[in-house]
Length: 160
Image (cartoon, helix red, strand yellow):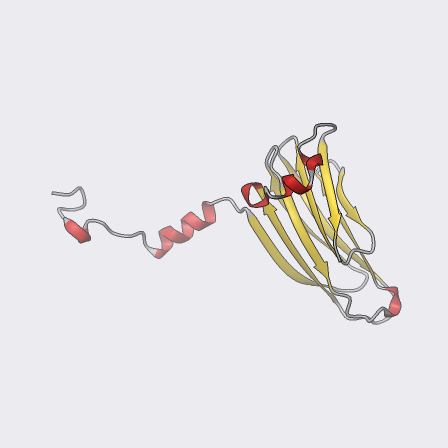
């Protein structure tokens, strides 16, 4: 007899139910994070996330300018740790990539701030971040990530 109420064969080998699968997925650490949102003119939106010690975080962002260059619309991106150290900063951000790691377990904050004059449409912000193994290909592109020095090693790249 099998250990499951005397059942044997296919009946004893039950698959996990949908609730068990959902619980498993919620408990598995996230390694990929993608989000898009609308950023109104003259507003600031921030996202916070935990980072483990020596864990590589990479990201790509794209900000659509739907104003057609009218109103001097500018968007700034700043990533900081819990102590306020700047991990990445970009004035007039439109599209780019970033990578960073910290020496300790920490929280980091990604903030987008839009500034302009007049009635302008919201900007669409697309942010895609990867952690750990998912982000490893950046070590070839950013040798600064493996170099020591300071509490943070950072590398930033731009593309258009």
